[in-house]
Length: 323
Ligand code: TXA
Ligand code: MG
Image (cartoon, rainbow, N blue to C red; front, side, top):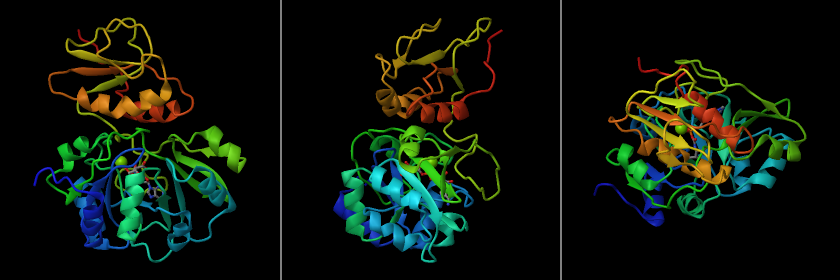
């Protein structure tokens, strides 16, 4: 059957048998497999065409499971888990030996998340093991926020897709590691710096680093992540620039521009609504007939920090002017 639509119960059976399934979470859809089964992990990398140096996030459905897969857990990590799990936050912690090297790209740490989505929780609980799940897209493409997005890119490569409706957060989780017990943000998300400081008392934010081909100390930070195929420019059009003929624009709020808005992330300027729409809008305009996708500036606050991080990485560095 194509696409391989699947129920949560059937998905759990497929996963227990070593298969890989697209599952909904509140952030983006994940491509799940048994985190303890290297063969299932290999299937995930193959389906996504993902290089082995980019490690996976392990998903759990109970806070206590953290101790099964991680050790030497800092106090700040426990506090953050109690405050924001289930939720859009991933904690990077020293790993237990039961986690295969394939899941962590042979790093000594493992990334763990307890998603705030009833269907994801049900699938993890029914399967009875933690599930490794990167975003369910081809490597370096925009993450999927609907089951249809998963079907379009991976439908004929995987064993099932569970449709849980559109993701209500819309950007990938905040990734937090710990240095000397203190939290460090490796990737911004809906759990904001303010929220982390409130619980942990301190915070460091790491700048994105790009080191293609190498196991990364701070993976998931590659510049080419999140790019649509149509060139995208993030920010206001420079005054002296002439946009190419087939330029489309994703507006935010009521920002004025020379190009009419094709879609509006949130006419009222609501950041939560804008974030939930962002990837679906980027995908819907990623069509060969367009020369350029413009995206209006989004305020760099709250979950807007995560949108800015992804859009800056998706953006051309110079405006492509038509002569
Ligand atoms: O919201 C999310 O986090 C989604 C949903 C499905 O949970 N998952 C997701 O996975 O965005 P993925 O694989 O697309 O991005 C996870 C990032 C990767 O880029 C990876 O490099 C990083 O997390 N990561 C995984 N393990 C790590 C580790 N031990 N240390 C540092 N970063 C790690
Ligand atoms: Mg991803």
